[in-house]
Image 1 (spheres, one colour):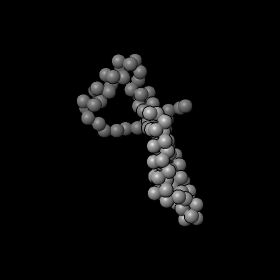
Image 2 (cartoon, rainbow, N blue to C red; image 1 turned 180 degrees about the vertical axis):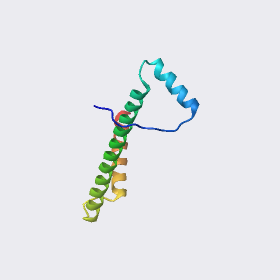
Image 3 (cartoon, helix red, strand yellow; image 1 turned 60 degrees about the vertical axis):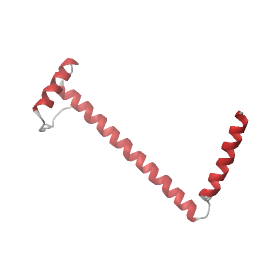
Image 4 (tube, helix red, strand yellow; image 1 turned 30 degrees about the horizontal axis):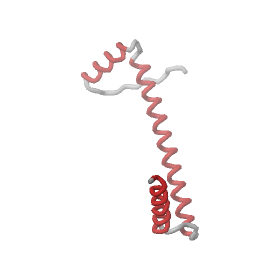
Length: 93
C-alpha cells in the first residue's frame, strides 16, 4: 500500500519522547506503530457499530413480537425460571 498522505498532530513533548523511545525499544518505526494503532481503532469502531446494529435489530424484533402479542409477560418468565432454578437446586442436593 503506497503511503501518500501526511498526518500531522500536536501532542505533549513528554508523550512524543516516551512514544519514540518505546518504538525504538521494539525496533519498529513510530509511523508503523501509529498505522497499526489506527487500523486497530478502525476495526474496533467497525465491530462496535456492527454490534450496536445487531442489538437494535434484536430490540426491534422483540418490540414487534410484543406488539403482535407473541411474547410472554415478564412475570411468567420469572416464574418459569424460578421453578427451573428450584428444580436444579433440588437435584443437586
